[in-house]
Image (tube, rainbow, N blue to C red; front, side):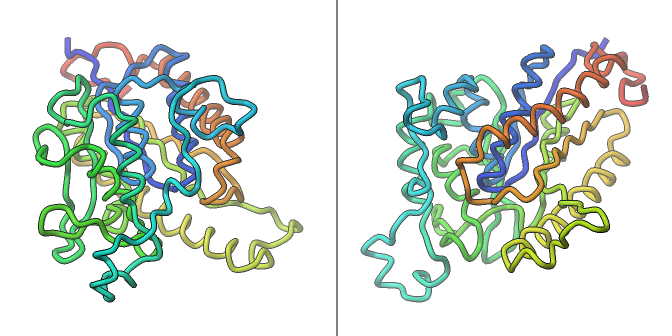
Length: 305
């Protein structure tokens, strides 16, 4: 028998990434315990926190309205992600204009919040991805890859969405959100030994039936959101298909909740986003469990069930 080893791979998606917490809530209810966490941007933030056993309710509390909070943990406000320029940034106008905000403030919050800030000292395998701005190469942080950088800095680099945030300097290189290169890094989960990979992807395009108000009439933000979803979901689909062909003995469970028109920026939709992720995942994971996907596997193949 081959022991079951489950990986959770989370896409980016800014505030919409809260749906990842719903997927993980469904995992908990069914009794599925990932030990490998791979993420970029919002997915990296979830991997670095939940992957260190911070309870889901504590993570959700960071986004709740003040009168609904239940814990004394940290708070994640919109301003947490919108860092102002540092003094030295004004000495480099080109760099200053490379993005509207900085992720240094997020890095400082994570330094205080994370139970452990060293990739080598955590029990689970946490892998965070970014992209080198100048070489275009994917950069991977975590055991078996780069561990010379604190987890807080790796996550902050991964969250540097081009245009919105200035790339984060790590060593002598500038890094940004890895999704410009890959929506997901499924290969990292497989190489880490996973035989079941749960994919949480928030880029499912919104669908409107004939007769409904067209997305084309929802203004520029609606159009941009739909365009991003279409591009990213197609990249994700092709990546899953390719990795499934090259690793036929691994089960890939692609969970893409219908998030609809929810904004990438409004964190106050947290409850709705989490519920959508939870409901979609609960259906998908329950069906997979009934098929025996989460039983220990024989070397001949669970993925083929």
